[in-house]
Length: 406
Image (cartoon, rainbow, N blue to C red; front, side):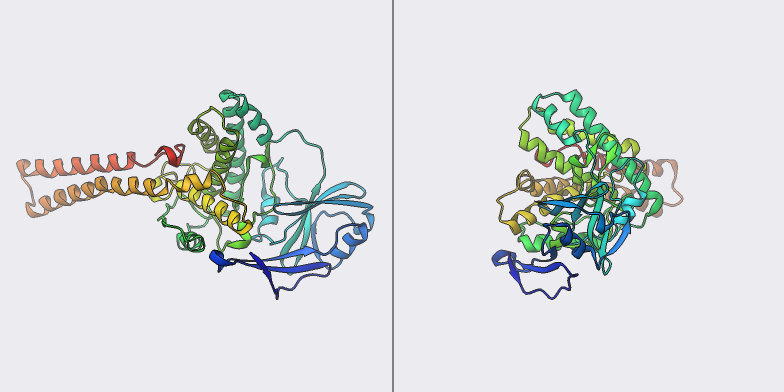
């Protein structure tokens, strides 16, 4: 991507930056704002002077020192004032629901206490700087290296339960019908930008309603019973969200992050068992309907379609950064066609089920009222239709099974 002229209005103390894709990435763009200088307390005062604050923030005049570092999601500053604070800048803003997540997250969550906005756009979020124990990713990596399955299952189960509690809190706040048109449209746009050799659309189930989701979840966001709500990832700037997402998407994001760690550490433990622990932990505390068999039903999207989207976003970000093929996303995408082919072949049983029910109903109509002898063929057709339908349902790939094992 290259920098081009930006027409985006930026607050005082900030630069407006616009990036546009080149070559094969034509059509990709991102608009960002970044602070001009972050070297002294005076810079901080200048930056926040005309921003709108919310929640709890340190008085600008109390800031005595600040140090900064760059992250893949923006600048992070440690501010010394009456108390120590951590300020996270959001170069590409957010979906506008950061405050909603923070104020309604379960007790004990690590949430922003306040922040600053500009014309309704999130610019900075702040939280108290406190020393913490190692996060769940640190603990999990150690156990993966030791091939300690029992400890890995316990850690992942706790992570899943913590995410499920968050979703139970969000259900009380918002639950809207699935927005499959916009969800499929977003995937279509990403596939077009990446010139994907395959497409995937899903009908989705009513058990995957829109809610206030996290959008991006990493195992490093968890520490014991605490969930950290942070800033969005780069793909949210490249392909902004136009609708809310289901809780299943958060779970898919977390499962995909587990795949990243499993690939990186090259442990001898089986990924399927680890995914199972994470999924079952989530199902224990998540809303029953959202964690039902119907919600996970792969023939109607399930978790698989969202895991596919996570892989696409990894490739999208890597393409924009020219950082090389992201793994295991690229390897996972290689199996998408085979995954789709299996589900297509499964439809044979769905077709047989429909035909059997059709013949059963036809025989009853043509011979109504049927005699006992005439009723037997109809019942046989209904029985065959039911068995074919059950077989079709049973062929749905289970969520704990990685794409490569289907």
